[in-house]
Image (cartoon, rainbow, N blue to C red):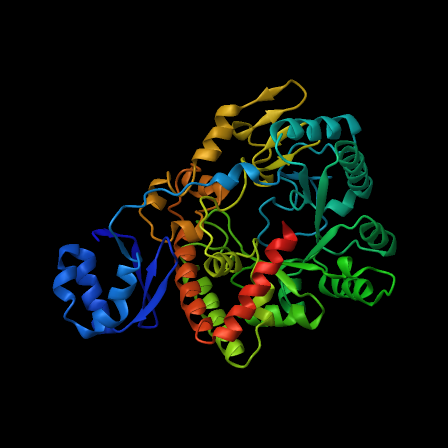
Length: 478
């Protein structure tokens, strides 16, 4: 039993043992911690500690069951499902925005030189055919309008892309899903009815109540945005002719140092009818903007999530887990970690960028994701001249938590999935280097998730109800 695959996790002087393969969690005493640390540092001491009643009662049975220490080294995990993933294509109808968000990655849509709008049917068809060739074994596709600008600024382009997509999928017998993320300021009855008739999954960027939203996401002229978005959401939810599908609005939230309580943000969204959230950390150059995640603000974000976990524990103890369920999904920064723990999922990648997710431009260029658009070093393909950078695709496939030096020694690697490629490039000049503040924060979030899941498991009935709901969502979203 010499192979150790475990971590010692400490939250508020509460100590857990965590097996990085089985995701087994055991809470231990300080005395048991000292005993385990002895074995951790010197596995040969395992048998001499059999006589300890604490060790024999709590730890030894789990070791004998193949957790924490093993007779055979497991080694790297395989990711066979990688080639069964549904391709996700991100289109940007226009590189422009009517807002001036204080944390914007795209500098309000003005950082790209390519202002061509996606209206050319031939370009769209060639792009779809390109991915049909790349992913021969799938008959599913997902189209996203999530980055690079506000998609409703050029509604004609948006309609054109979806019209061509539907025609393509009908001809190829493809199943498809469409995800639209808008800032919500341009919604009107005509657009809402079009979204509804096309069964588009609608997401609206709203960072919190009026105080947070108006500070973080004002119009370009400085005017406030909250009231307009609030009224547009209410219009959707109160329209008896709009389907429940469209009314199931996905809330997209960005956390900055201006936010002091995540739980209140989730409560706010529930109060206006938004039940599913994707909460992200505002990131960028870590030596710049003081509202973003960096060394000086790292502790602020840690404290935000520390408080959130304690709020969730209080909720669960009071029989309320609706707010918690709002963020347990594949997109929320913390929620995806919880989902993996609950479902015992091990991942090699944080996302599908450059592997099964791609950003498609109006000029026919293909990039790993929206953040890379315009960086010619990361041009994956050009459908106009049959250019395909297979070496770059291979690099993204091979850059994962089992190959990145900083990840290979981290016990949270399969739970975390690693850093964002673009964040690594931005702060470390390489997609293979994850020594960032986001990496440090993610480790802390993994520790908090272990603590929260352990607390959830104290009540079997509540925990298995949460687990069954999470599992059911996975089946529906496949």
